Image 1 (tube, rainbow, N blue to C red):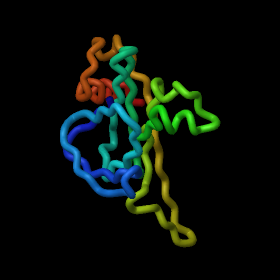
Image 2: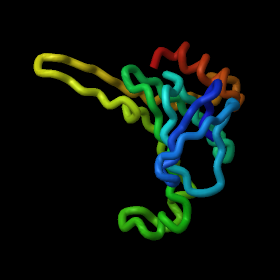
Image 3: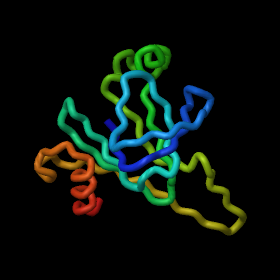
Length: 141
């Protein structure tokens, strides 16, 4: 699951970028996903319940977030993707999609994305989104 806090609008790339609103603290899926979350939180937790692993993403200057998994049929159609690799991957990346960054000559812009593996022992082994984000903040990643 990809954790987040609050209510978010997202564009579904599988439905001609139709706009939806999602509420709750976690995103879960059991089919192909290709979503663009608009004005996403600056910190996102990714919880791997099966392997008891937790990751955190922090970003600056990139307001949107993409969540993507090709699932089985599309995975088989991708030449550089193993047929069963979709079971062990999730693409989560920050972006500027709804409002692309446009610069005039001489202007500057900086954006960043930081990825952090949060040790289970550091967070007491708990797979809780809020606790993970608090722990990641303390780690100064």
